[in-house]
Image 1 (cartoon, rainbow, N blue to C red):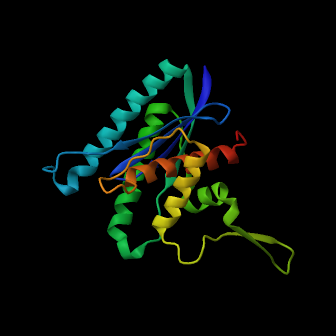
Image 2 (cartoon, one colour):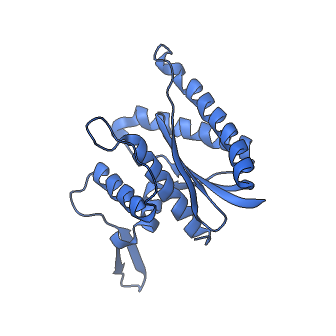
Length: 204
């Protein structure tokens, strides 16, 4: 069986999912909506969402093994931001859910997922925004620098548009007002994480 790779962008609302073949070609780019009954208490929702994530991965694993004749032996996951003190409760929730997701991945695929930060994945995926400076010691420092004034949404849209150019067959999701849904950004982030992970492993 061929060795495939899986990359994920996990949040508590949507999960971006990208599947790559052994040569680093994109096979699928999808998203999972973690939609549960609104009557479930807020403090218990992470359990139900964890179950949805687990059930999806079990079904996903079985389907791709049968459809592509592959085994997933690499998993990349976007590491959640941990330096946002203004939203400490949200940060704690994301860190906790990410830990559950990583353990679930390990249980299902018998693979320890490799965590890649947003900064590191964008640094590899968007080399056009890398600025190099040479220190007095001769050491060259590389810094990721998006255009001044860009907010997080603008950075996400740039990444999505770049993915769309590389993979023109991908179908994106829009709101009724014809704006990009957040689920589309989860998909492009999953692609960005997978691309960078495959680059590091020299598969791409």
